[in-house]
Image (cartoon, rainbow, N blue to C red; front, side, top):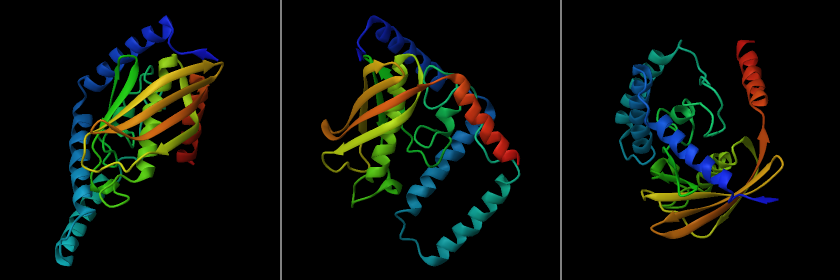
Length: 238
């Protein structure tokens, strides 16, 4: 198994840092900009709803408003549009992943959202989990911690220069991860062996490690990913 600290890996890390900055900061069309604003509005509503003490009459008013909102959105399609490679490929061209991903997506109200960047040869993810992500009192649900690791390490494996899909993800929870706190994920590329790419990461809150993770990814060809997208489209059309 080859270590990941080669000159090629360093060069790829630089390319990924530039690519991420370009994708995330690029000007977007008016529709996407509007979707991001709507996503943020829904995100705030979700956060308030999960911790609300509002009386029943106010909640019924909100239900009526949300029913109207849902009606306004019906009839415009119900699937994310893939624009190039995804699976947090980093070196691909799927800007849509950074709008609609359930972890990164700025337009996805389910996303915290997590902000990713490539720094010093590793992937860094910054995020604050609000009330909607609560598990133990005042703490992030462990399932969301695992999902965020999957996203961060998915980007990390792209430092191999390949597109990969998760084969195994292992998370060790060291201590509770607090809500409403600036958190930092760090992902590192460990080794490459044929189609297998191994990664590791940590989660920090206030400088303390709250969880650790290791991930195994299997390299797939762009054609394989395209075939998955084509299959989904056939199912949607049937």
